[in-house]
Length: 116
Image (cartoon, rainbow, N blue to C red):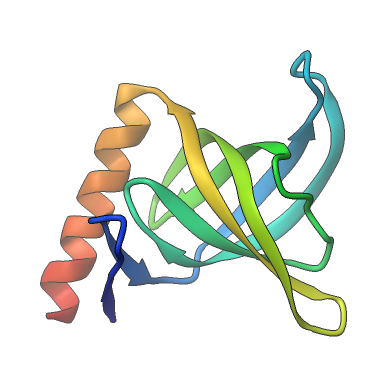
């Protein structure tokens, strides 16, 4: 399903496994975990995880988009508890290389073509 956001960016409801790493201010690893995307856009994701992630926290994300893996640096915009031990965090993309950006764009375009 395609959701049009007030941000002017289309989000697709898609479940993709990912690895995330909490980073401190110097970029050092604090904690590592696994989660999944609930929706994806060119500007961010909704991350579902079993660990609470703090608003403002920087995360290094490795997301599996079909047969590709992309590495993206993101920032937690908000977190809410969905049910016991399950959290949803809105992640805004902060940095990604051009290759990751192209893979993400292509993934969203193909998804929209196949589901519209």
